[in-house]
Length: 112
Image (cartoon, rainbow, N blue to C red; front, side):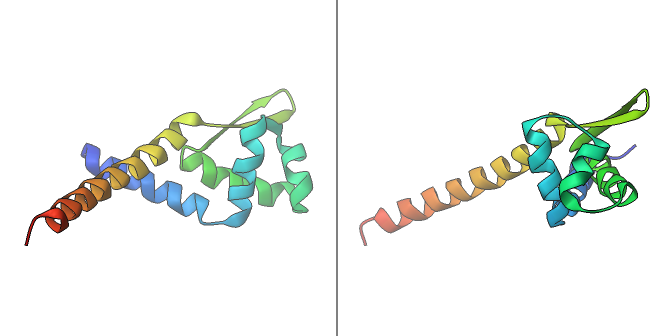
C-alpha cells in the first residue's frame, strides 16, 4: 500500500495532468454549473462522443469528475473531493510561502 504522502503526490500529479488540457478545463467549468449528459457536454466542443469520453476518463481518473449511466444516458458531474485535494495542495504551498515571507519581513524590520 502506498504511503499517504506518495498517494497525495500521485493524486495531485493526476489532477495537474488532467487540468493541463484546455478542453478538460472547459469541461470542468461547464460541469461546475450543473451536471450534463455526455452528448450535451460534447456539443460545444465540436468533437465526437468518443473524444469527449476520453477526456472525461482522464478527469475521472484524477477524481475531478464522476459519470454514471442511467438507462441509455451517461451523466457527468463535478466531483468536489478532487477539487478539495487541489485546494489543500495550493493552500499548503500558500501557507509555506506566507510564513517564509513573514520571516523575511521580520529580518528586514530588525534594526541594523
